[in-house]
Length: 506
Image (cartoon, rainbow, N blue to C red; front, side, top):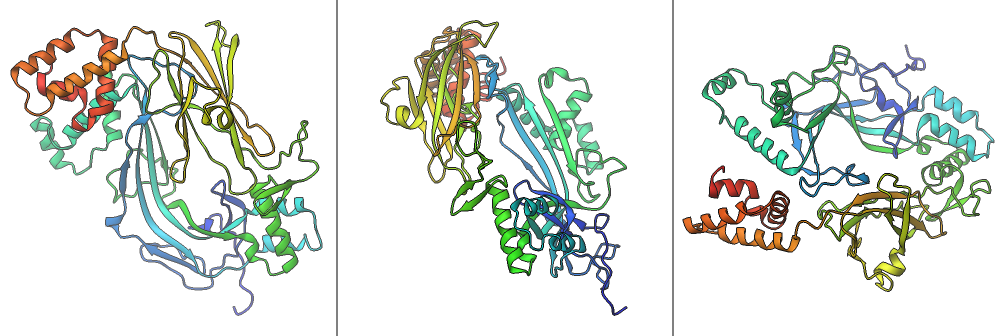
């Protein structure tokens, strides 16, 4: 057949996503097929039975480079730190840890491209059109980019929540002991017969399944997978359902190009490019002029301010590093603005005291501060001072709020302000300051004392002094000593572990 090659729909084809449009903001594959898919050439790849579409180049990743495991450091749960925060000074912040196993099996590249019939028809229907909305509608269907290179394989991820850092630490040390073979001899012999690796999520699951509830009280885990785990990977945790296709799935688009580059008509290409920029940065209701949006007359709010450029909402949260004390909290948020459309020039922070514990809507406003005019300058904010401001490396803004009353509920509300005066949607943190039952200065002094006693060779007399000091402490003070010790000296050994190492498991 020497005639025109017949185009085929690619939605049921291995690596078929390569022929569909792509939205490089949402990172999603579009519904419309952008590129023509044909099977005229005898295109096969090692290890794959299916014939591949013309122009598709497949590079197989060696087995030793597949099936890679990652586990994050435990960090305070970001969802806990914003909104209504049920903070306990005794247990501290709950923490979150992420585990992932990824098997990148194939690198895919598209060497030849031709516009699909569906996209060609859609473009021809716009001949002579000048309305931006028509071109934006085309982008909604076909995406704003087409895929040039991508990776395929399998991925599984688990998120594990712990009630506090101490529980996480204990479970992790127990898991390390078991995975290193420091378990009873009969289990070790069983392990030698079973080559399957015990992953951390499997260990967490085994605690719940075996009824060892006290070991994992307050611990929960959620897992998700993309594709079916290959038999060559022993690290998988989720059992794939029989309905899951065995073929590798799209994991990541690594190279994409704007869809307007496929268009040969200069006028259509220019209008499609303008529509692409408008939809990316101006919500499709304004034109990009250098690095700002000129909004259409319909894209203004009741206050007369332009609304076409989306204004990011900053998410206010408690500091991940400094927990609240009876008279002080540390708040933080990420400073981010798109390269086109919006310029963030200030933030407004409102502090309110809740007057009715049963009804958080009953508040009295104590202060509203401008980050630029009041806090940075220090002119009107003796009780609010910057702890960290953004620079080229860091995007986090951190504020120290002092002069608070103990055992009192406070509501903090944050807005971003752009160069037109428009405010973002608000973000809140509601938190109750702890009671002043714990003298934090004393707790810091005791932590320093314990470290000095344990530092270097610890004599029997020093061990007894440390034991007597800790024995005299109440539970809240002991937790604050643990907190301060780990803040400053954890690199020399975590507090609980170091105490047990020096004093025995008392």
